[in-house]
Length: 314
Image 1 (cartoon, rainbow, N blue to C red):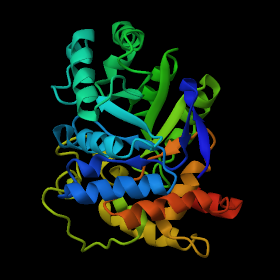
Image 2 (image 1 turned 90 degrees about the vertical axis):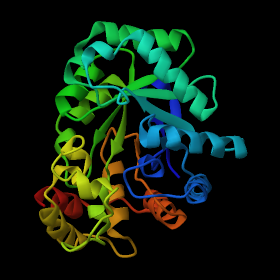
Image 3 (image 1 turned 90 degrees about the horizontal axis):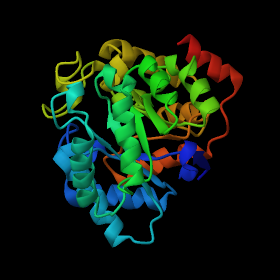
Image 4 (image 1 turned 30 degrees about the horizontal axis):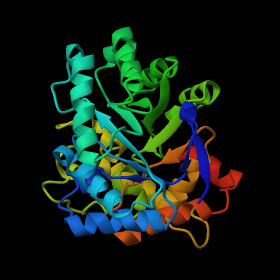
């Protein structure tokens, strides 16, 4: 597994990480033993970066990771969590006192004294321009509650605002073959500033697995059923904001570009980690088989220029 330096933090992380939203909620029910098996398979495959959030299952995802790491003290994993979406999305609530409370809850959930990385979880846009917010985040570092902080964003403009802050260690943003806008300005700016990039929604909520058709039905408690038009949260988090039928059709076309011996999902992940400035990509997985297949994408040969051009055209 290739390791890359994670932005200003100087930490080293696996280029393929594991997202754990699905272990908490919004992807259908995942049993505890199944979740722990996914984390075990990830570590066995060389993954050293887990992404979670305090809102995933109201802390269930964090608690499962905490239990796993207690049972596997030899696992060298950087855990990135997120905060700020367990309250109304009002800029006035992004205060030092609230940050301390939220971070302390995540520390308890994960069973650690200090968080490796805490990220603002797609807050209201004005938050990124608040000096007080970033002063408060700096204070969390000074108090040794967190080792580093970053932001998870919905737009490129938000990412660029955060990158300009000297304490920002990382930016998490949607990036995949169906969502390439961050390549224009965000990745170059992050690279120049030494800010890590975490690529999320890398498989467009499963569209880039190639296994869905227009008639596929998702469980009612799966966001791919109830958030296709942004009914519950930002539409971009579900199928990257792509209209479902269009995405299914595009995935079929993209399959024609897949190299021999690889899957469509692995090709999509390989495309992402091939983009200059990406630190790690965080596909989710509901089974050990999925997480192992994701990890194997790191071993694929670089995609040729013809394939890269084909992705852009599509």
